[in-house]
Image (cartoon, rainbow, N blue to C red):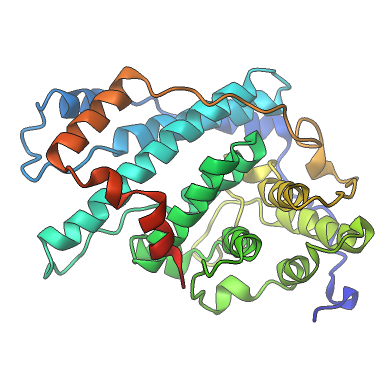
Length: 322
């Protein structure tokens, strides 16, 4: 068992970007179009001979909506939760469509020298944590299983998994698995289990006394600020993405899951936990699928009658078991 002596008093990183600089970075994205989604629905995607399901346009739209949502949160704009909800809807929709096609690709091309592996497990983990933040418990649980299933099937890009080593995201998935306690797991390499403060939180997050967990969460907050930097060839960071630089996504996930099992949470006095991330937002309604998404589902189901079964929670859970 880890002990308090293993906590490093590293403090808040001096290089931690300011709110203003993070907002500036979030607003500086390149707009994208939904032309590919429109073409898919109208069957005008002539190169799509195998009827691959469409997901890239929804991933791009969701990612950009999320940048605006977090920027609005850091500027204390009330609309941030609704915008975040729309981004999560888009990203989860993209993940479901992508997961199906990754499986189908391996059936259609069983001897392909480069099997399809494009599911961004880091983004998927973010979506799970943000869904918990918004109070979308059922959807967050599905996303947690789906992320484990994608990892266990090898659908993730090799670079993001074997080289970038996003330890905070491995921690969030390990926490989800511990919470579920039904066999969902992933055989993490050593890098996914080598952060003492995360291991200490995993050992204590169910402790009824919030004072036991408080120093570990504060240490994790400090670590977050030190991991908020851009990747280099020599080192990769957990929170270099502007969406996460000043967003305590991993801390809020711990607090939300404690809430789910009926435990009180500690009050964390740390610069990372400034409003609006010092509390959970009110329960957010889930935005309905727009016409493009409904059209994409209609085509996917017409081309692949097994689509709903293959992406059902039952089969996804089966694939998520370690």
